[in-house]
Each structure stands twice: as structure tokens, then as C-alpha cells.
Length: 467
Image 1 (tube, one colour):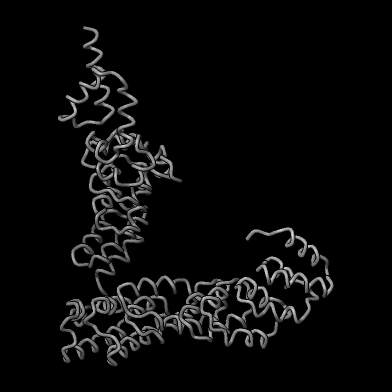
Image 2 (cartoon, rainbow, N blue to C red; image 1 turned 180 degrees about the horizontal axis):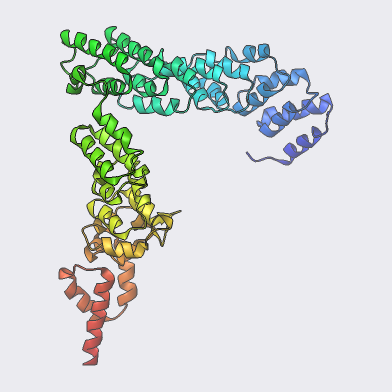
């Protein structure tokens, strides 16, 4: 907000160590009328703040002000609970739960409210103590209904959390994808707890294995847990199959009945990370590609990218198996290899990859990924293939269209970079009617770049003049 001279006046009146009650009152009345947050915060910091004024400030709705009020060292647990136990504004409470350095008692008060949005905020707040997060985990997970995105959301929320926090969530989850996201974050001795929770949800009819994301979640849990827990899942699958409940479930679920306790695919994936011999890495990758799921293949390739002993060529050959998070890592890894970068771009152009290679801070960068190969040379090479049209649909065309025009075929330039192309043509042909004539005649059959067409047209025109 814009602070007036009046604001400055009242801040001055309460700037002494212990301003008078009269000045405190004047400053408060002005701040309350004007919603002047800095004055209210300065009042709260006063050691001699009049109790009636402090009481009025505590009833305000601004999260920043309430956080300052709650953070005062003189604040008692009783005061905090009294102020917030009946607060119903979820937006306000969520804002407060996101604040750092609040008293532990206040975080506990918020956690005990049992509101999923507030609890989720507490889990994301690094300042919240473990005891509050354990309580918050229960209500946060209860709001995570089963869907195609649940597993990734729950995994993101609980990655890095203390195992006690994860365990608290695990026994209160009400979806299979949530269990799949949590099971790899608890100690091995809790695998049976996770599986028993999954069994309970299925047998109580709260989760249906016919949903593809539930089938995937069950398979994911099976691959994570140890042999005793796997056997519990096999028995569940048999019972559900006997009831006809697997009619629409993924075929991979039934296959788990006879699946080995130690999956050779997962074993191969785990070995890739630490293998130093490329021949062995290639052999392990073939095992995964021969019988693994798309997820497992992506996982294997991700580990290969992180392993410095992996072959860049093999990774590039399998680039289409990578996901959008892994491909940039591969491109960064090979940024100094012109030939491999050409192979990446000759297959397809992902805008994220294009921007990573050519653009930084909305400017064209001279070297790929900042310190790789010369980007103009790379553009020249990859534009010899059927790539310019795709590049013209990325940020490159908006940030550095003239760079692209230098190497793209003339059709791409005219159809996709028309404004820049028009400026370039007018600038270079100017009023040379002969050059324009040759430009028009050569254009229908021209397959090279626009600059090359212009130079050829001007050259022919000059020859005609000199005859």
C-alpha cells in the first residue's frame, strides 16, 4: 500500500522504547482505519503495549499481523488456543500455518483442527516440528482421494518427511495410490502395515481394483515390499479373483500371483546405478527392455543418465523412452557433442529441450546449455533435416527469429516467421527491382535458407547489370 505523511507521523509517535498509551491509541486508531500493517506490527513489538490495544489487534484478520501477535514471547498456550480454536476461516489459518517460527503450541493447535488444506500446508512448512506433522499427516492424507494423480501428489508431499510422519499417514490413508506413494518411505518392518491397510480398503469395498490406477498402485506396492508382505497381496488377489472383482483389472495384477519375490527386472534396474562396465550396463538395459514396463524402462534410463560410465550414444538411441524430466538431463550431459545433439533434434523437437539448448534468460545463447557446442553451428547442422518447422514453434522463433531464419528453409521462414522474414527481405532487397525479379522466379523451387535465396537473387541481378 502507499503510506502517507500521516502514517509516517504515527510511526514516529510510537518509535520510542515505551511510547505513551495516548500515542499508542492514536497510532492504533489510525492504523485500524487505514489498514496500515507496518504500524500494527510496530505496536505489537512494543514491550509496554496497552493490553486493550493488543486485544483488539488479536481480533484482526491479516495473517501477518496474527502471526506476529502469536509469536510474542509472552504469549501463553492458553491464549493461542483460545484465539484460534474456533477460527473458521480456512484461508487465514492456511496462511498462518505457512508462517515460519511460530510457537510449537500454535502449530499443534492448527494440526489438531484436522482440516486437510491446513494440514497439507503444515507438512510443507520446514519450520513445523515433527510432533505437529505427525498429527497433520493423518488429516492431510485423508483428503487425498484415489485418482490418476494421487500417487505423484502424495509422493511429493511426503518425500523427505520423518518416517514417523509417513507412518502416521500410512495407517490413515484411504486410497491405494497413496499407499503406493508412501510404502517406499517407511522402514521395512512396516511393509506389512502398509499391505494390511491396502487389503482393508479393498475388502471393505472402499477401493476397487478395476480402476487402472489402483491396479498400478497394487503392482507398485508389490514390487516394493518384502516376501511376507508379497504373500499377503497374493492371497488378496486370489480372493478378489474368486469373487470376480478382477474382471476389469489390469492383467498385470493377476500375474502377481506367480511373480517371484525378487523381480529380475527390478534387480537389473538396481544394478545399473553402480555398474562401471558399459557392456554390463547394456546387458542390464536389455533385460529391462525385454520384459519391463514403460515405467521400469524410464527408471533404468534415468539411472543410466546419472551413471557417468554409461554410453551417451546408447542413451541418445533410447531418447524416446525418456520422460520430460529426464530428457533435459541427457541433453545437458551431451551438450558438448555436436553429433549427438544433432541426433536428438533429428528425431523430434521438444520445446523444453529447444529452450534449454538455445535460450537462457530470454536471450539466444552462443553455446548450447551455456557452455556446450556452438549453437549457430548446431542450428546450421540440424536445419539440414526436417526440423526447422518444429523449431519455429518453440521459444527460439520468438526470441531469436533472425538466428533461425539464417538456417531454416525458406518455406519455414515465410510461413512461420513471416513478420521477421518480411523485414529481412525488405531490408536486403530494398529497391533493387532486378533482385526482386530473380527472388520471385527462384522462390518456387528454392529449398535452402531465405538469406541464401536473397544473396543468389542479388548476385544474378548484379551479373545482369554488368553484362
